[in-house]
Length: 221
Image 1 (cartoon, rainbow, N blue to C red):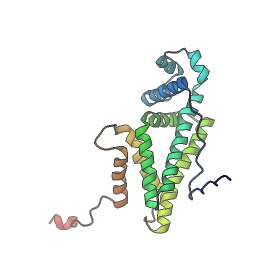
Image 2: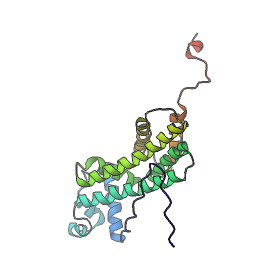
Image 3: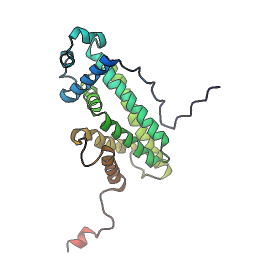
Image 4: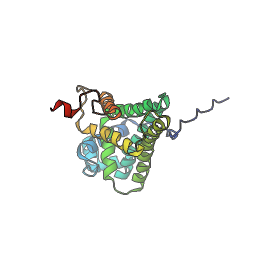
């Protein structure tokens, strides 16, 4: 008898099916494409650039990826699939709404740190690809990702752990900090990505104002 699948937590979509593993040459081409998309941007990278970096002909590249649309699917869609699966699993394990918010951002930061080229390449391609059908799918994936964080915040508000703020704005604030990290955070630096996230969360959850400090008016007399 097969074991039934455990129910998904509220606000969490079912995890996408894993993609078939790429063969050695395909994996190499995907790695080169991610690196070039991260360095030059999606629009500025031609299939010719990828072929030259791999030291193959364009005809050989077309065997794997007939156009940039196909590469977009592999770089962006599959990256979002993996990210969604990571955050869904992390959120499902966390015991409280506030810990679910932290788990969501930790999983996202770990993904960015461990697969930096993939993260930056996916972001560049997402914003530069125009209104294609595949970008429509990527938009739905991004919405699912953001809705999961929003659901965690809403749950925290409902149970009284969090103040009754606008969940969408709170989620966007947290995601803005996360998305900017890839522009300045470097591997091997003083703080790991999830340690930066912890400081962001402490600031957001506790605020900057030191309520134990004397009032400004009193100190300026």
